Length: 243
Image (cartoon, rainbow, N blue to C red; front, side):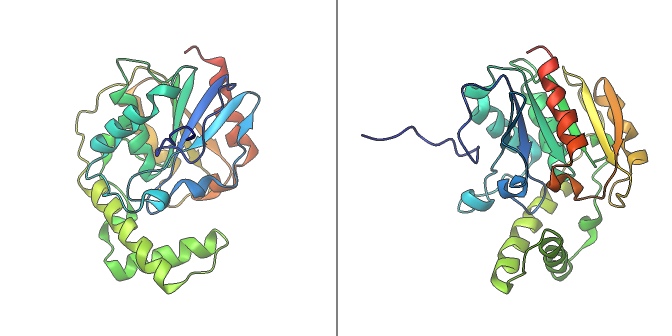
């Protein structure tokens, strides 16, 4: 007897008992494990890390070449689990994926909320410090990132994930949206007090993409990986929005 087929887009199977879901998309150069410090569930709201092609457990697959291509695959892959109120959470690079997935699902079932952290609006990009970096600089960036997340950089690992990071940087470089469509659900744009990568003041353009609420949390660019309680509390409000 064979078990259920694993959904490649999700790091773990969803719970049928969940009353709401937040799909958490990893940012550039990383995979679903970036959310290993997050709770699986809070007050009936399930937090589900997303795995993208070309990353971690899907490393053997070719990465998507555009955010729109990635969003279409993600939307199709998640449809069986969009039966309760749900939201996307995207940080930095992955905020663009979350936005495009919401655009893709505008005809339904649409998200109840879109949570975007540390990213400029599409019409204000492409924007990222890494866009100007060569591979040597990206490898140094990956080394620093691993150390900041509590890991020990290994040469082969750094080399491997620099390739992943380069592919993600190039997707960002190709992302040009001068007239972005408005999404069908409210947006919460999240900035961080100590973020020098994308400051809260740079996020104002999201109002062009839909009804937007802005909030600023205490922390730095990577503080979201620690699942700070104010962030988890904010995401848990998805249960208060209609499907």
